[in-house]
View 1 (spheres, rainbow, N blue to C red):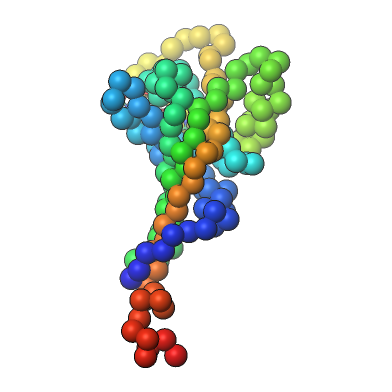
View 2: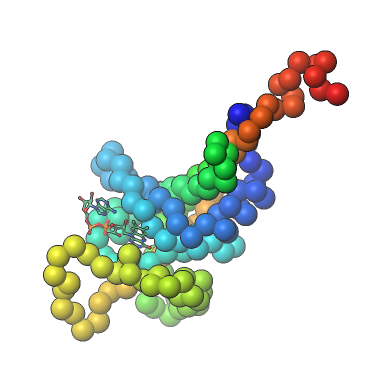
Amino acid sequence: MFIREMTRREIVDLLAASRFGRLACTKDNQPYVVPINLAYAEDHLYSFSMPGQKIDWMRANPQVCVQVDEFSGHREWRSAIAYGVYEELTDTPQWKREREHAWSLLHDRPNWWEPGGLKPGPQPVVRDPTHIFYRVALKTLTGRQALEGEEISRRPAREKH
Ligand SMILES: Cc1cc2nc3c(=O)[nH]c(=O)nc-3n(C[C@H](O)[C@H](O)[C@H](O)COP(=O)(O)OP(=O)(O)OC[C@H]3O[C@@H](n4cnc5c(N)ncnc54)[C@H](O)[C@@H]3O)c2cc1C
């Protein structure tokens, strides 16, 4: 098996194919990672949440990263890490278009709202629950891929032919 760096195009393709990832944020030097559903479009990852710790932390420190991966075989995998900045798509005229875009990207998934819309214990009785759409504006992308076999460039010269 060998590991190779993925190209930016390959990383974007993996992000675009991903429906699920892990969102990392930090506050006061404390990291916090949560699984989330997500959708990629035009250098942004879109997601949905109820108010809670991750939203509080990202409001306090918008520098975040998201990790996605894919196992395509016994020992073969691809993994991408996207560093970026949290942007809350507030229910205001300024973000109306992006909010609708987030909705259009996420809503065709079955029960897409459920993981982000439920909390442990009795659900709060509220007439108008605060649904938070947000996106991560992607800045730096890294990706690695594990492949079966031996990397051609690492084989002894006589084996290359
Ligand atoms: C497959 C999958 C998809 C999901 N998709 C989404 C999504 O799209 N949007 C979304 O908002 N949420 C999603 N969730 C739920 C998400 O992982 C969080 O549990 C949830 O959003 C609450 O996060 P919070 O920061 O608001 O926690 P809070 O309700 O504020 O609670 C914070 C406390 O609960 C603990 N906690 C919170 N979540 C978890 C967890 N998952 N595992 C263990 N401990 C936890 C924290 O450590 C902390 O102590 C998904 C979960 C899974 C497994």
